[in-house]
Image (cartoon, rainbow, N blue to C red; front, side, top):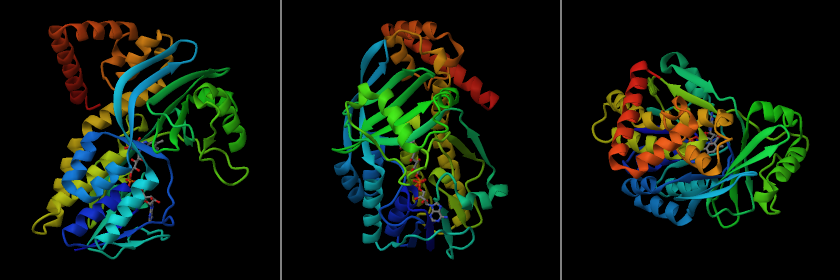
Length: 397
Ligand SMILES: Cc1cc2nc3c(=O)[nH]c(=O)nc-3n(C[C@H](O)[C@H](O)[C@H](O)COP(=O)(O)OP(=O)(O)OC[C@H]3O[C@@H](n4cnc5c(N)ncnc54)[C@H](O)[C@@H]3O)c2cc1C
């Protein structure tokens, strides 16, 4: 088959790598120049490496070599102290990941075209993989068939980096004159860390971040997070002198259907999950794996695409729930922030739980402590969570 992947992000490139190995004639078209992307490091965990090893051991080994291993999670609340929790995972620079996947795709004979913005309907191929990200023009053109819905979060966030290298994942909450701001920070190579800053829209406006240019915002954020930056700068600012920082609200996307005619969605074009659970890249790569698997064997393409859609919608359900709960927890920070730092760290760690929003935070923490001490209570606890989950599923939320 002649296949065009629109978008040279993780979904488009990894689908190209796998489909080229099945003997398809694959082209990836990316609108950015080679070596240019948005965003900084992304986290992932061992299960992703395991599934990459199964799908393409060559690129899996390269990604594992390039990965930065972080160890532990620190939760720091200004004025209350810091808690260190056992945890661990990996991260990698987005650019490095894309460079590795581009080189691997080219080695397998994939045609790569840069600096070309593909219009919907333009690609001449038997199958078009719309891997063109959350703003996908291809999805918008097929909106009547695909049924996309977007839920826009209320918090403001900006994806920056710093030259301070965090060897543990850091959640640091700082108190400003206008309310709380916090960072999600983790090293991703020997010289840099991702540094995402998030806050409520009220805090954002009251601090004047809605009106400031990038330099002024950087100075304010560096002052607020000075204790955590240790004199290192925030980097990743816009290059135009008067441009503001790219503050956004997270857009959670869901599509009823993932394919129409000869176009199939993959990655952020099909679904997004809030960045606080660090799963979008893993899910995009998972889409590529499932799509390639569905297309193996005799070519009944519509049946394969239907199978792919069913597989991935089922596989994504837990991540969608976790991401929704996690995003709501952070939007509801005032409900949790006044607890002592140990309880706060527990609540933050458990923010994906569906039960949490329905119990007073201190009751939840006590119940968990009891559950952790007693095997029997732990079973009751998981049954309660399962009942709550099935009630939510029945209500369709
Ligand atoms: C703040 C933040 C932090 C995140 N942290 C993590 C994390 O820690 N771990 C994790 O797993 N995920 C994380 N993610 C999510 C992750 O970045 C995305 O889920 C992932 O990049 C999706 O890959 P993709 O290939 O679907 O889309 P993208 O990476 O967005 O790639 C789409 C590509 O398509 C190109 N394109 C768009 N339109 C066209 C067109 N018409 N023609 C040609 N090219 C086009 C774009 O230029 C882009 O290169 C984070 C996201 C955010 C916002």
